[in-house]
Image 1 (cartoon, protein in one colour):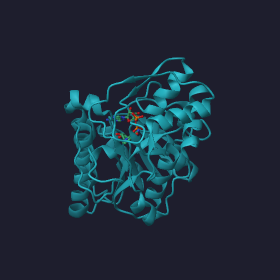
Image 2 (spheres, rainbow, N blue to C red):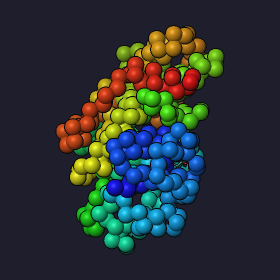
Image 3 (cartoon, rainbow, N blue to C red):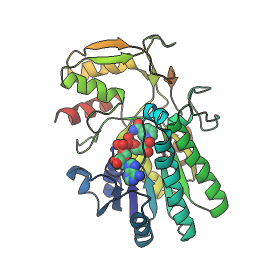
Image 4 (cartoon, rainbow, N blue to C red):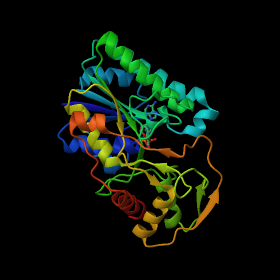
Length: 315
Ligand SMILES: NC(=O)c1ccc[n+]([C@@H]2O[C@H](COP(=O)([O-])OP(=O)(O)OC[C@H]3O[C@@H](n4cnc5c(N)ncnc54)[C@H](O)[C@@H]3O)[C@@H](O)[C@H]2O)c1
């Protein structure tokens, strides 16, 4: 029971490697970078390669995996606006090479599990976001993810390709056993706050004038291990389609700061900065479609998320 994980050295891919290995799969990782030893041990094989390179595509044919968990991608909104070509190429064009290889080699029984993003919604029309809402991305990053979703649906209808696309909301936290977490300097708010506390630096809170109860942005935080377990279910179950992975609960940036104070038992030095371009006031998602189909339920609270991340940053 082979499973290939692209982006296996990354944050979500690495956690998914640990979860798939614990579930008994033979995991083959692919990434442009070497993974840390704390996740490498969970892989039966690892290829340092671009996922669209011929050697990686041939590996798919040789390994005949039951699924490819496709986490490899470039994922920052701001840089995608400055350099859209890289984002369309790495996220969309290269994924098309891989899908075409599956189709041309009659490998469409291999399920493709794709890391999409909440960024496909852009400014949400209604909250919580539902998969029925019209996607309206406002960055090349979000567009590149939506383009892959369109392609997956079309290839499913035309070539019977099996797929699950996950729209992750804010992935956060770290492995509960502290084996894996975010790389240093990650842009996510929990990472930025905790690294600031650890390094005695000031944390810059962007935007305090949003139309929310405390004036700061509200986001849906989902523990990376809950995401990893959703991927295991996607490998195990014959569920096709596009699914939100959120928790249906929002937390404001100020709540995150308060939780960081409580977990670390330290003060958080905060200065305020302007809003970041393209930041909606609120973004939360109903995961009902995925939960109803597979029984998935997020297990971890915001306190767990911050606690696990703090352990990761300070171990
Ligand atoms: N972290 C989040 O909150 C979040 C939210 C929504 C969607 N996503 C998506 O989930 C996926 C994983 O995110 P992450 O946070 O783990 O990112 P990450 O940057 O930690 O990991 C991505 C990994 O993919 C690898 N990679 C990129 N392009 C590659 C290529 N062409 N060939 C081989 N390897 C390649 C990178 O080396 C990296 O190790 C990404 O596609 C991202 O867009 C992440």
